[in-house]
Amino acid sequence: MSYIEFQQVTKVFPKENSKTKNSNQQSPVVDNLNLTIEQGEFVSFLGPSGCGKTTSLRMLAGLEQNTGGRISIDGVVVSEPENNIFVPPEKRRVGMVFQSYAVWPHMNVFENIAYPLKIAGRPKLEISDRVQAIIDTVELAGLALRMPSQLSGGQQQRVALARGLVMQPRVLLLDEPLSNLDAKLREKMRFDIRAIQQKLKLTVVYVTHDQIEATTMSDRMVIMRDGKIIQVGTPEQIRNQPINDFVADFVRSSPR
Ligand SMILES: Nc1ncnc2c1ncn2[C@@H]1O[C@H](COP(=O)(O)OP(=O)(O)OP(=O)(O)O)[C@@H](O)[C@H]1O
Ligand SMILES: [Mg+2]
Image 1 (cartoon, rainbow, N blue to C red):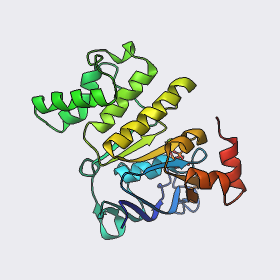
Image 2 (image 1 turned 180 degrees about the horizontal axis):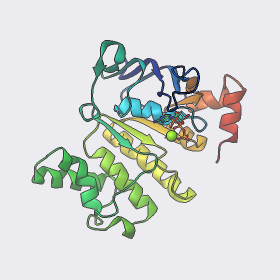
Image 3 (image 1 turned 180 degrees about the vertical axis):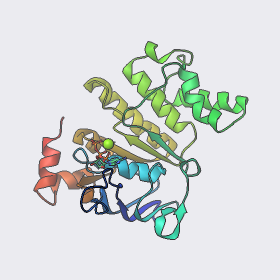
């Protein structure tokens, strides 16, 4: 059994305008997804806009419920609508850094990172110990009292990352976390994220448009189109043995 398993996972969003014909025949945005991820693995989802990457991540986090199929983490089924199983996000120990990452502008670095612990009602002393430790991990030492407006883009990104890590998730989901950064900073953050992942032995699922990012960071890449997985493989396999023209073109034409 693998650490994370997607088995025949499908997501159909209800149609907004039900007056149109075929109102309940909305096509799936994630269509029969089958994928296993091992503990400690770094897996990237790569594919064109709208192919279902974010939706897949949100289903793993429990922020979205799959319409069909089964998702399990560490041997426990976390979502299987057919059997009325749904483990809520706060019980999954899955951290997520969102596509449009947002650090709260009215909170300083410490408060931003402490927020999930505060919501969870952790004692003050534990909060300050854990926030301090994670601040060191993401190399923001000395910046705890700064406001986000006083930080660089990369530093803000690390605050968002720290906030995703502070609950000590067993799985970290990152949705295009570097897209707002300039090329040079993006390169540095790639190494930083990979280093943190290896240090904490985290299982990471990483969404990106950028094949260089996917290639340099991942153990395996998942190429998606129209809600379906087209190919799964190591960066070398994807580059050297693309299974069709779509994969070949996609990895060739992505920004570098
Ligand atoms: N809440 C929703 N209601 C209806 N449709 C949705 C909803 N969320 C996403 N979709 C649709 O599902 C499809 C997949 O969206 P998703 O956000 O997963 O794509 P993505 O691969 O992350 O794209 P991008 O690279 O642009 O972020 C899109 O067609 C999108 O319009
Ligand atoms: Mg997305």
